[in-house]
Image (cartoon, rainbow, N blue to C red):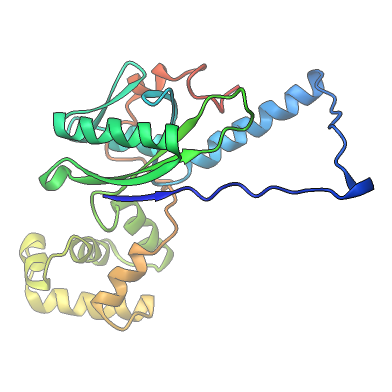
Amino acid sequence: MLDFPTPAASTHTFPGSMRALPPTRYTGPERRSVTSIEQRRMAQMLDEVDYGLLLLVDETHVRHINKAACRVMDDRHPLQLLGAELRARDAQDQAALRDALHAAAARGMRKLLRMGGGEAQVSVAVVPLPAPSPSAAHAVMLLLGKRQVCEELTVDWYARSHGLTPAETAVIKGLCADLTPQQVATRQGVGLATVRTQIGSIRTKTGTCSIKALVREIAMLPPLMGTLSPSRPLMPQMMRRFEPSARIFDA
């Protein structure tokens, strides 16, 4: 678990006649309409990021959750939502989560937690967000780590952009899952020579020099949500909990 303070926000001073004047902004219906559009755009932007993001206030109360978080927080995920309250399934994880959220809200400390066990183990970054005004509540962002190096939708996106065949795409998915070529061949029900030929074709089409370089390139792709339909629903019952008040970027 890593602890490190959030850098303090920079301050600006204005000498003599350069003193800042108090802002005078019109806040009528037109301005509110513009703000509403900006908030919706912000929500859309967060929903396109293929990392789970949650915004918490009062240390445990979830005010916003993006689609990626809804997708990954299934029955095996170490974190769960009880109403709008975030909790860990394991008692030991819950204690670590509570301490991390309190440290973030009270002292501005960032923490990296490892939660769950086995295939369900994930890393969770706890990031304090500076209050926008003295009267505003402190907020904390949770960034959920991935369970595997390369998500299937990311591999599908990569394969389509390079013109790979379905069989070659299946080979890449196996390699990204840390399978050997022999294991990929067994899973696909083909010979090892066939898989090696497919790997050679993949390397030619993608311009990569090795399997390691191929997996690294896919793992370093921008974390964008795919346009393909996910293999499981986006937990509509979870989404309903946060509309419209809790998904704060929705007007």
